[in-house]
Length: 78
Image 1 (cartoon, rainbow, N blue to C red):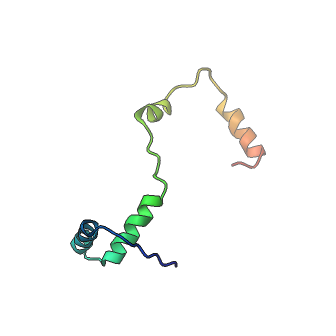
Image 2 (image 1 turned 120 degrees about the vertical axis):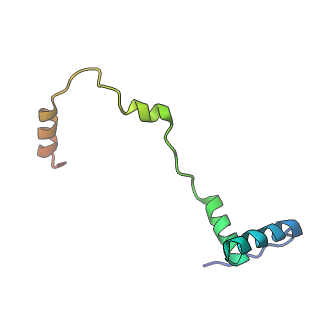
Image 3 (image 1 turned 60 degrees about the horizontal axis):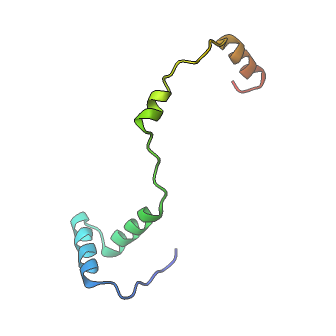
């Protein structure tokens, strides 16, 4: 674990962090740690309604499911 020192933090920012930490029942240090960690995580991509609806589109031409599963079986995928 590393240590980080933050200088010249505005008093209003510090007050707000302290208030949010107190409201959650955690230390101000813990509040800052969690907020900093969440700000650098990559956000989870949420699917759009169009992407979800595209999953239900029927194939343009019929396919042989038995043949497909036999091929998958032969290749060790099943």
